[in-house]
Image 1 (tube, protein in one colour):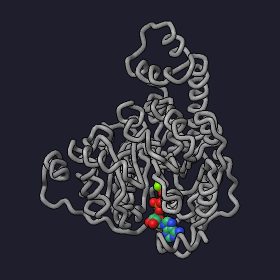
Image 2: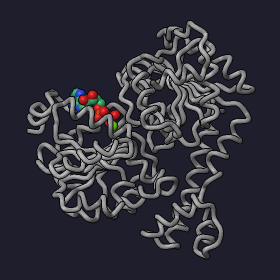
Image 3: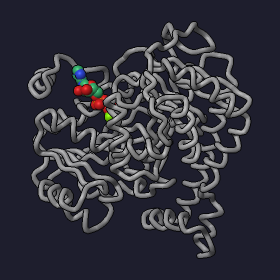
Image 4: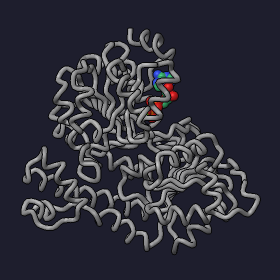
Length: 459
Ligand code: ADP
Ligand code: MG
């Protein structure tokens, strides 16, 4: 029966692992958390029920690129009734989408947009059948961090008691389920396959300094295929891109300060193989539907296993062999700790906030949003827990860089998984790894000034 619907709406013969179970729960009206690896067809888990239920679905999504990608996929599939509103649209497009909204099957919006009362009016009377939280890990990872509106999506969900919730993610830290249950006052049924991506090999390398990292990295890029290099600061993003460019490769940069248009251009050039390498901060990659990314380099380690798994997961969506390589040098600890703890809200900050004393405006902004929903006591508890989790995740990553056992087992263990079978090319600690050998052609011929070239990239 479901198979028949799958064939009818999508032309696929069978479900991928996990899909059918999730869809059955959704159709039975259950709130469901689906944890399936990247590329395993999570979108279909809400698309098929939408067609079957014949009611509109709201998809709450954290990133513009993610929305754009899914909207494009739906349109390619022939779906006209899709609307999506975000800050990257011009006024005209926004108006068009607002008009479309009441007739849409699929509605893509961000939490920030939805939580503004005049925007909420646009959807409050819709007869939603399903609410999807895409990349649901963002709820507990960002909700109390830099996007507090994420922690308030419960307000939206409460308004639609008839709609059940489908939370989807590829990365579920052990506390995600209880966070979701608590934040949304639900009792999620979990469907989980695995977070392990067998086709991605894991390697870590320690160096003396950045110079040594670079000396090792540049020759590797000659045959690493489509590659993303993650760095932890905008400054490093620019410097590294410059070094790679000088070495002869066209390189894109991607960080939070680029405009929507600039990001869009870089993404497209990468997807269309016009540039083989992108140097990016963690803002890049979610929702990039490029299936043949072969190499993910972490020039700086991430501060948590969740981020690491999320970022390397962008490689090898086509199932072919791919590699994830992280680099470390002693000064990086300082960088990572600054990144992790500099702007963190502590229990003391909550006390200061309660007393109305001085706090940096960014912190006040976050606390004010959260205070509209949570009590001071709850906030104290929330931030104390968040701090502990950050420390825990960071320590796990510090362990990763000096590990002498299987890296894969170590990683998935953090998420409560046990590795049943190891792939042939598992990690540098316990297998012979094969080199990726996909040549990245050197394209920079005429000596152009770097800034000039970057300008061209964005045209
Ligand atoms: P995810 O969100 O889990 O990373 P997507 O939803 O983007 O994955 O789906 C990845 C690809 O798998 C898409 O091209 C989609 O059309 C395809 N796909 C989804 N379900 C099936 C299926 N049952 N059979 C074949 N292909 C599928
Ligand atoms: Mg997806």
